[in-house]
Image 1 (cartoon, rainbow, N blue to C red):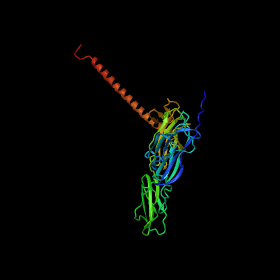
Image 2: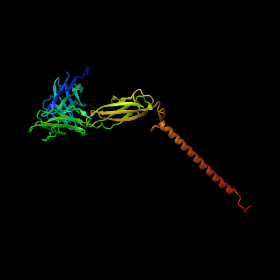
Image 3: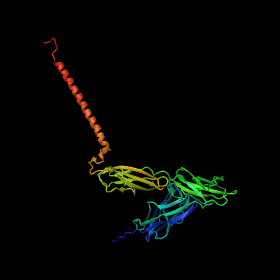
Image 4: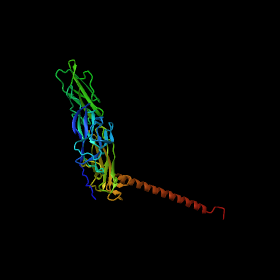
Amino acid sequence: MFFAAPLALAATMRLTPATGSFILGSTFDLAVVMNTGGVAVNTIEADLRFPPDKLQLVNPSLGKSIVQIWASPPTYSNQEGRIYFIGGIPSPGITTSEGIVQSFTFRVTAPGAAQIDFGKNNSILANDGLGTNVLQQTSPASFRLLLPPAQGPKIFSPSHPEQGKWYKDPNPIFQWEASPGTNGFSYALDHDPNGAPDNVVETAEAQASFTAIESGVWYFHVKERAGNSWSGVSHFFVNLDTLPPAEFGVKASPGLRTSNKSPILRFFTTDSLSGFDHFELKSVALKDGPSQSSFFFEASSPYQLSGLKSGRYEIVVRAYDKAGNFRDESVTMNILSSLVQFVSPEGVDFVLFFVPWARFIPTLLVFLVFLVGFVIFVLHRHHHHLRHIIREDLQIKKPRPGRR
């Protein structure tokens, strides 16, 4: 009996072009190209993701493809930014180093940086009768999406210099170069990348500033007047995000009260505008009060703490977005020398809540005073009740006058 040797991972899928710059409003073609690495294959599955706020799919197929059978024809969503398909080639399959699996046409709808990635569901199956997945690597594509070339004054911003970057400062300043003979400028700030100011002179200065602008993508447009003629329009855009990431929780395993000296923390959040960037974390031992030496360090979830001694700790997780806004979430952990421990140098742990010594001792004294007072009151009531019973008993036994 003969056994076929297992196939090595050899195939790759890439996007071409892998890089490029495209102007707002223009279209470009993108192809999924396969290299089978010398192995005959018969099935290709691809899952592509693109930024729907910057790109929209215009044509899901340019017609040229090595695929002969569509098990799942290309489907797409311009709302979710996803393309998915499964194609096949009849036996004996195909061996190729530059096979175009499928091509697409995209339109640029907003400026900025855009990346088209392969998602989770990708495979290239060998024509071996076993459906062996020989896909080894996928390669994304990155593009620069630009505003149209300036038709008027050249614009720059000292406060928000880099177009496409997210800023948390809501007070942008725009400046531009004035041509000789200019006698005024008209400008506008809006959400329209193709917007234009009216034909009314706004200022004679080559500068405009705005305050307390709400979060979002803003486009600044300016044109200049020389004599009775207006120049073309120039554009500049800024991304503003003044809001922190979404609220999130910090979960500890096996729990917030544990004898495990290396608990595991889990946390997750999102950001609706600039996007989530990274987490930072710090651990503060509470027995000495907040420590000035404690510092944040970058971390990812799940994160395992290590080297903790018995005691209480405040764990602070800080989430940053791409604009630099952040949100803190914290939990208090009690690391015990044993699960039955309830007294520590910091206070008393009642499982459901913790009372530090600074509050426990005065509370205990008040409780003891109340308890002593209650005992005295009960004893007094009991003594009074006994005297009353004895008095009634003596009155019953005392002989009445006039009787023998």
